[in-house]
Length: 68
View 1 (cartoon, helix red, strand yellow):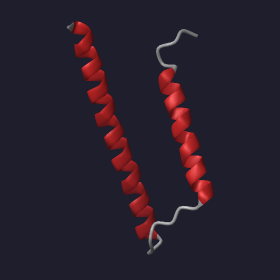
View 2 (cartoon, helix red, strand yellow):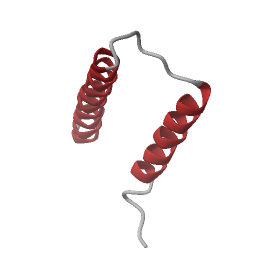
View 3 (cartoon, one colour):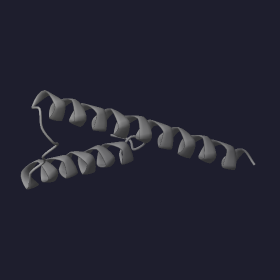
């Protein structure tokens, strides 16, 4: 029973943190678009950079529990 508890708490906390980070990123993109007085435009290069950043972040999170 205890195993399920920490798993549930970890998944719930991860989901909440992910949602907050996603909302913050969207807010920053909207602010940038409004500052430039136009629509949000993201080119392929920016999309690739963002995707690689996310993959790098996930890799770092996966390595958190490993010993050095």
